[in-house]
Length: 179
Image (cartoon, one colour):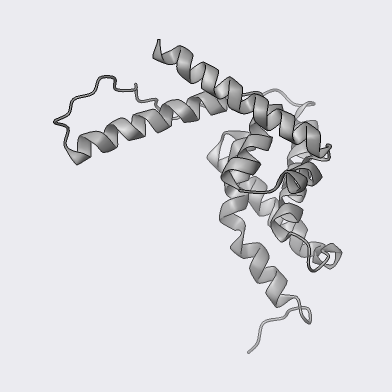
């Protein structure tokens, strides 16, 4: 038996579902919580599938989905204002390993690199969301400034400014930690 589907909707629906890992990644940058990110991505996919007729072929599907995700997230935040805050616990933090031994084995180098990545991730999580979100969308998701501006509903110049400031804050914090 064949599955029920709208005529011509299979391709777009498949593309939407294929972008799920990217949606979860963006949602994780917004929520800082794996379970909340999964829920947010799932809600975004459901909303996109229900309103796929609104998508204009030839435009950036990922940007359209990210805009939906952001709007769903904002709706969740608005609804949460009327309820008490739920505080999530972050994963255990590995302290960065300092020093440079030239006789390190590949496993040791990998551990040091992971510690450095953890340090960068912590500095990124500490960024205000106004800076973290544009940086995530441009640096990680590799979206254009114009696409990010559309997702966040701000001018392109604002996106460029926030990305620049986010990078400066990150570099400043990472250099400060090295001292």
